[in-house]
Length: 120
Image 1 (cartoon, one colour):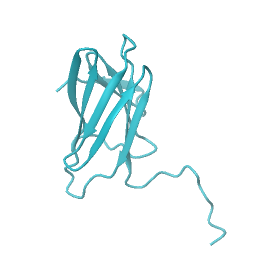
Image 2 (cartoon, one colour; image 1 turned 60 degrees about the vertical axis):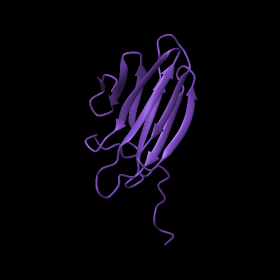
Image 3 (tube, rainbow, N blue to C red; image 1 turned 90 degrees about the vertical axis):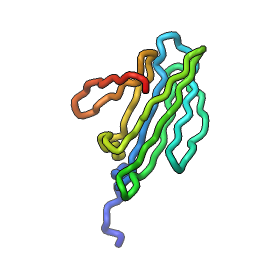
């Protein structure tokens, strides 16, 4: 057993991660509240450039859905941050979302491109 190399940064099999970063151009605080059908992840306040992340496993039926509410100033928007059709976000290739006023933008680490969406 002692000859098995230890890899401290090995991928977490089956674990997916969503990261959300506040890049609002007015540098306001961003309040984020994410939920699924089964889990309420609570309310988190992100300062400008602050990040919130959460990890989960897709359910065996493939119906995992996380939706988030985003509030700043007098703005409130909702977005399905992870749907059954979403690309996998397996650690260490987590899904990184940047929140801007017009909607969330996902950064793809393989293509180094942003894909922006409208609010729901």
